[in-house]
Length: 419
Image (cartoon, rainbow, N blue to C red; front, side):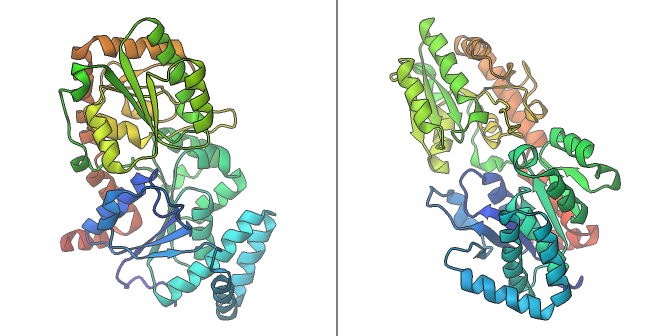
């Protein structure tokens, strides 16, 4: 069945893994759209990996379909055969296009797209939206080529700078109805590299924060004892956590009283554990592993400072605007970070946080020492930070922008009227 404009609007979200604890921004988007009366379906490229899940997941009404080959090889093959019989011209033209890239992962995405195309022919959606320019957007693009469902996608950080070949990215952008990215920094980069901004396709929509989840606290619980310096991150190089540990060693040598807590898991966990032992920081630094969102919110409440000294890696990987910076600022925790990528769009140094040069543990230590010693500075930055998040990074604002991109203005008004 072909997409028909008069159908009830339903957005199909194509994501890498559902659910994914580190991608709260996707969960927030879906919930905000559902709260506005928009039907959503979720299509996950991979099966979940068994990590802790977000408590708000129970509020999602959208059904989930998994597209991974694990346990679905026969179903994927059968679906592709049905699409090939029903739409042979489109199917084999799209297959040839996928083969031209000469990559096994692209061909895999093509077959997953055949499966998705079969699903949406039987239970239609009116629009696809993918997160990340990697497999999710490739699947959305090939599905569009097969059954003509319009699609958009959100480009983030590593997927733009390290994971997607320019040729593939260019094809994704050319076929998309619109392209969204989460920072002005990314938008300018994509405009200069791919050159589609002139036709109005490229939009910057910040990840919105559900402020109701994060209670602002002016007086931190840890002010009566050792102050807690908190970091929440995947344990990967671009988060700069090795530099944070070196800064903690500098502060310890200066005789300051503090505790560092790092929440998160990832491939660098063992290396960070070794670094903690080598620096003699076992009594000052706790690597707490991945935790539920409720535990993370409690951590923000007891923290006096939040630190995330982001860096750019040798392969070009970098953050956009890390969601945890929004969460910390929304919770009233003064933040220390670096002016990498889109971070300066959120943090104005000395006004609502402190920015220091990347790869500079001495500068990190100096900023942390200032905050440890000055409760008035902590309070001033915290109040300004909450105001910035409320003004520009609330989920309601982002959801309205997404609605405007996903569908014509009159359709967006109709949905809002029903909510």
